[in-house]
Amino acid sequence: MSIAPRTKILTSALGKMTLFAAAIATFVIPTPLHAEGGGPVGIAIASAPEQSSGVCFGENSVETLNCARKKCAAGDVYSASDCLRVLWCYPMGWSADIFVQVPEIHGHEYTCGWSSPAQLKAAIAVKCSNPFLIECLAVQIWSPDGKEVDVAVLDQLSEEAKDDNETAWVLNDHPIRPALDLYGGPEFNDETLIFSLFCDRQSGTVSLLMREVGEIDEPAGENTCATLSTGGEPLKICGSTIPNELAGIPDFNGSSPIFDFGKFDLSTARSLNVAIKGRSTDFAFGPGNDRPKRFHALCKG
Image (cartoon, rainbow, N blue to C red; front, side, top):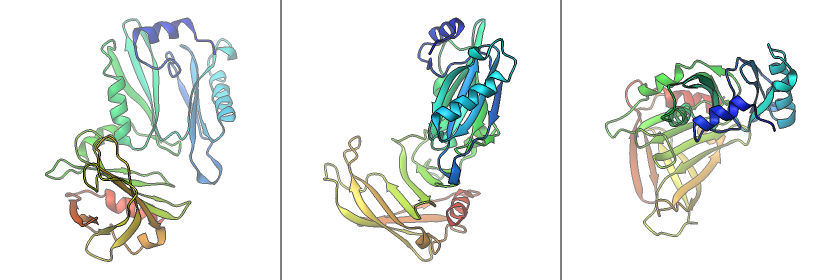
């Protein structure tokens, strides 16, 4: 793939910014091309430096990239050959178009594949921390199904419901595989994740990933069950412990038929109790936190 000279200049000035995802002064024209059957969607972007850009969504990389290039070429470009295929990401997850500027040169960077708006916000913050930048901001955001989302959703993350222990609840409202995550700090990453409760409406399962359920240096592979309760009928999820090399303490990963989730009520609960391996912990939802209710509705369909 050939790269326009000014793209090289820009990426050289920005240091660690991804060359493959760089595009100069683009005007983005998104076109939905959703996966058949509601499965995961990929995002493709083509750009003509300082002229035009096109965005398409779909399953097939070649078809979706070609779609993006056609959209780019339909814009105000000198030649269709100026439209470069700059990004393919599958599944696209939460994705963003980020405007960046260094002295005398400006352009667009892209980040994709994030499982929640919170993770996307953190990724944008990392890109915008480059000291060479004089301006950096997200100008477009897409949800995992290829729909454009108001950029203000990133600012709303500062209002995530938190309890006195500085935990934060994050909802990933993917239409097929929604997730309710609990993080143990201001950063939303793999190191601060306490647990992730998610359902897969295609496979008909509800699953739980729970961090650090054993003892230090305890071997993984133990078959066990977790019991989730909100005061009514509990939800039992069975699986096994899995290695967590970073912590040195095993995690738990298990699943249950999704119809069991229908008897389990998160819609009016104020807290969630998780009992596993002889330990029982209550996690408060906090005032005004509607994410458990919305997650429950997404899973029930």
